[in-house]
Length: 344
Image 1 (cartoon, rainbow, N blue to C red):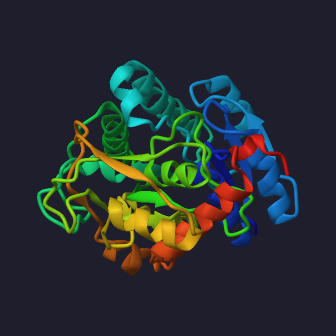
Image 2 (tube, helix red, strand yellow):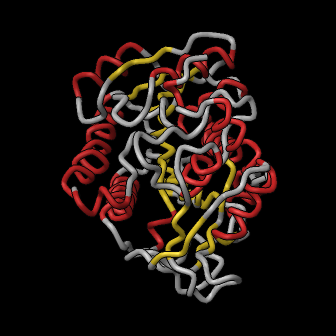
């Protein structure tokens, strides 16, 4: 029997790649997205890549009535919940917007799931819930703390999920704590498409490479790392998408409830900013001019995962290398210099 999944925020960067992975794994999908930070063109392209139309509903997770209509029209096995705002800088300037969307929206979603007795949730969490780590690599038992409202909104949702699992043992709640998603689908048809100046490193590098931006600012070169620049655990978005499928498959195979089960998704390896720039320049054949500027408030020196739990419980591990991450990012950017505004 085919399992049907609701994918909130399924038109976004990670959501769109996960839709392809879900389809390939035999799941039926319904996408629910308000398109506030995504494009319906992503859904069109995913439909072409999988060779069939995707049911897409434009709606907001804070709109309980709209969600009820979706749940009453479908029998879902579970929900993958991506819908959320994600810009750290904006969250500092507009914290209420982040708490309203990310926290209140999730509460509304959980209430409607409960009404329709859908108790399986895979939640898009983040390694930001670990704050400035005391030890490396970071495993799921590491202390949680946050340095900005975006991270705090993710951590607040995790606390809500923990409390929900205690209150009612029929819930199966897996927050996946992503490290740094980069890359794009190998077809070059879908990828990361920031609305404005990119907040994330890889799209910034690729926009410099394609000539849209003049140079890259690297925040800080005096960290206690291999070359003084920040070290992060970059993970290919395609590997990340497979992690969501693995989490659903795990829930499908359980005979009893799993409660609250946080799992890291990362490679377990750290790469510095300069190392990433060098790799990208090599695979793209483009010069990437950069300059060092002051550290950003809230940034940490190093952050990388222990991904042992994902391997032992879900049978999942990251497979794609930094070079493949750079190649796929460059293919997407060079084929779509203006992102989804470039109609194919």
